[in-house]
Image (cartoon, rainbow, N blue to C red; front, side):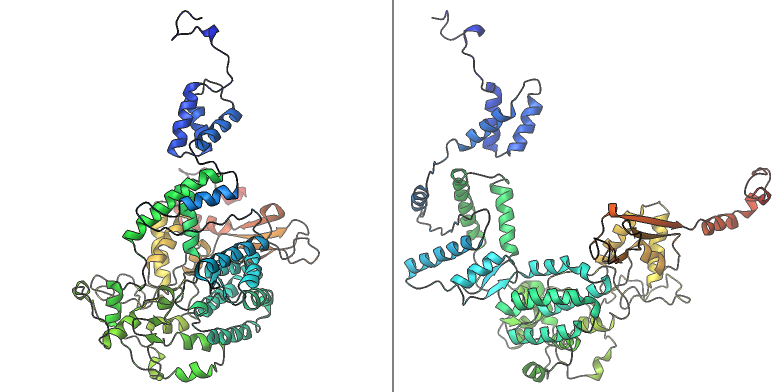
Length: 598
C-alpha cells in the first residue's frame, strides 16, 4: 500500500521503456494535424533535444497513432463490406467511385484483371458489354497489351504531352538546327483533324526527313515508335476529346499534396481519406457542374466579332490529298479552317480548346448566336493595319491568318535561340501593330542609318543590333552578372511580339553587336584526346574506338581547353590611356610605358 493513493514516490513507479508522456502527447497531436513522419521526427528532435528519443520507438509510436481509431480491414471480403456500407449517402446523394488495387510491378496481368473486372461490373449492372472507346493512357506497354486482349476494338490513344517528351529525350540523335525543324514538323502533324489527313501527312513527313541523312536514326525511332506502334497521338484520333491525360496527372498530384501528404498509407488508413476526397469532389461538383457544352468567353466573342469568313477553294486538295511535299501540306493546313457554327473548327485553338473565334463568328453571321451585353461594351480597338505580303498573288486562299503567312517567310530571315513549345500556339506568329503609346512614328530614338541588321520584330523601328547594344549597355553599367543578364533577356523575349530575333545567349549577343569574344573553349575526350562534337548542348566523342561513342560525355570524361586572347584587351587599355602611361610622375620606369624592360 502506498502512503498516498494519488502520489507515488519515484522509486515506487513501475519501470517502463515507453517514450516520455510529453513526447507521446506531442506525437499524437502532430499525427492529428497531418504531419509526415519526417516532419514529426524533426519537430520532436528540436523540442526535446535534451531527452534521448529512440528512432525505432518514435516510428512505432507514429504508426500506432495513425492506425488508432481507423477501421480494421483484414481481407478483401471485409473491404467489400466496407464499400457496400459506404455506397450511399444519408442525404440520398449517390457518389460513384472506382478503386483498383494495383500491384507494384504494374504488369500486363494486373491491367488485364482490372479491365476484366470493369467489364464484368458493367455486364452485371447494364446487361451488356462495356463500350470503352477510346482509352487514353501513357506509353506503358502493359496497358497496351492488356487493352488489346480485353478491348481489342477500342482505340488506344497516346497522351500527346508524353509523346512529345519522349521525342525530345531523343533529340541528341540530331543536331540543334535539325531538331528545331523536326520539333516544328511534329507539332504541325499533331494538328491533323482526320485519320486520312494524318496518314497523308506522315507519308509526306517521312519523305521530307528521308532526304536528310544525318537524322536517319531519329527517323527510324519515330517510325517504329510513333507511326507503327503508338500512332493515335494527333487531335483527329479522337476529335473533340482531350489529347492529353494532364487532368489525371494533376488530380494525382492533388491527392498526394492535399490528402495523403505523400505518405505510404495502409489500406485502413487510406479509406477515410477516400471518404474525404469523395465528399470534397461532390461539393465541388455543385459549384462547378459538369459542362456538356463548352463555355464561350467574352474575349472569344470579341475575336469572333472581328473575324471575317470569306469562302475558300482548297476543298479540292482536301478531297484529293495530293500535296507535293510536307511543307506544302503544312502550308495548306494552316491556310484555311473547316468550321461548323458553335461546334468545331480545325484552327489550332479550336482543336485544343473546342471553341475558337471562327466557329463563334460564323454563328454570329447566321444569327445562331447573339453577343452578350457585357461583350458589346468592350472597345474593339484600332483596325489592323494592312500587311504587305504575297497574299495578293493568290486571292483564292480563304480564311487566311496573317500570323501563319509570316511563319513561313520569317523562318529564313532569323533563327530563334529558343523554340517555344506550347500545345496549340507554338507556330502562330502575332503581327504587332503600334498603338498611340508607341514612339515609332513620333520620334527617332536611334540612328539606324548605318545599321543593316534585321528588325527586332515585324513593323519594329528597332533593329536587333540596337536592341542588344542598349540592353548590354544597361547591364554593364550596374555590373549585372552574365547569367542574370541572360535571364532578363529571356524574360524580355517572352513579352515581345513573335517572331522576334532578340538573342538570349552571351555568345549570340556578342555576335549580334559585332563584338568578338575574348575566349574560346574546346572539349577533348579524355580517353583518346579527340575533339568532341557539340550537339544540343552536349559533348559527343566521334571516335569509333571510344567506349562512349555517340553518348553524351560527362564532365569527368572530358577536358576543356580555354584559349584567352589577352593581347587585344591589353592593347585597348593602352590605347585609351596612352597619355597616362607616358607620365613619368605617375608611372615608374619599369612599367608598361617603358618597353625597354620587356
